[in-house]
Image (cartoon, rainbow, N blue to C red; front, side, top):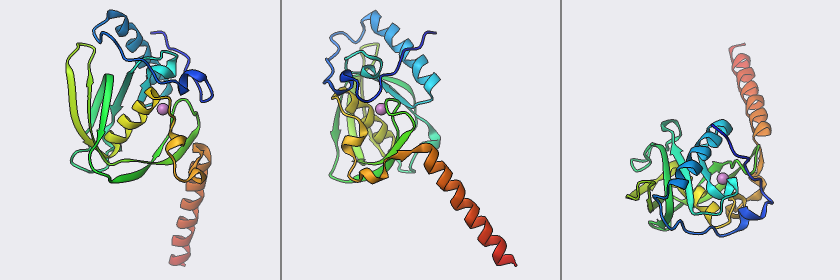
Length: 190
Ligand code: NI
């Protein structure tokens, strides 16, 4: 399966408001979705929006792996899903911070506040209406991907840009902290 180049931050398409899909059952969309799925799979992401592959349409693909759930009963795992013309309604004013990365900002991550609980509706490739209530990581992925459709990347949602950093550096720091903790345990035994 052919993969597509993923646009990086700075490309003008990533700042555009994407156009609604006129017919979710248009067979051409299946080709786009197949290519997006192959692209996301190769890149190792959990979501990809059409504008990230240069197509300014309101379509995203995403999945919610069980290993990333927050434990909230409404934070439910989701197999690979297509959302066309998605609309999000936040439920309540509560937000929570969580780490996000983005295939258009390779190697980076940052702490992003998002609505804890949302309702969303969208259409599938079969034209059927999808309606769900979601919390936690599930809600976060949907909000992150739908932001792409309005020309927004996660740093524009961050309240502390000081947490924006490279995954490699965070991993290095975590390893160093683990080494210190292990050293202290050894010292305790002594
Ligand atoms: Ni993204």
